[in-house]
Image 1 (cartoon, rainbow, N blue to C red):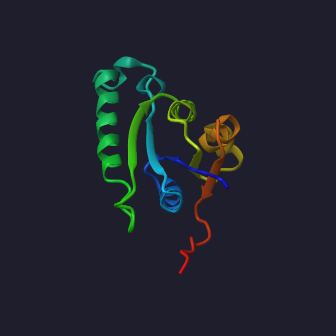
Image 2 (cartoon, rainbow, N blue to C red):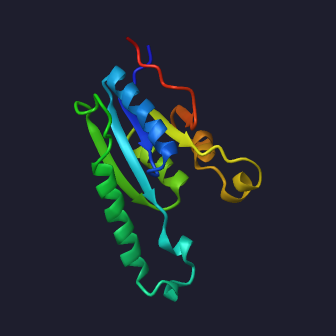
Length: 156
């Protein structure tokens, strides 16, 4: 029997992450597991290599992004039947795939449920795939959820 005590759903607040959240919530309910929600804020230095470019300090920018992410995480999951779930919410700063792996190790995550953007060709080559890197490096099994996907069928 597979025992899942802690399920991690990394989210970027996109429709792709929302699909993964649906699966993560259902699995957490079925296994009576903790649901860990993680958002990774990209380091502002990586986004804006020229510090004076924005007219505001990089620390302020990252702090604002973290505050917004925390607020959005507090509103999640907003799905029917999830009010009894034990939810742990975390915001990290850094490269997304690396922070997801670090969090999974530290929190002893049993399963990662992650959405995929489904990029192919040049977009995939240029932007890479966080989900693909997580699958390759994760310390636990990873369930990838693509969007659009088949309708999730709830048992009757």
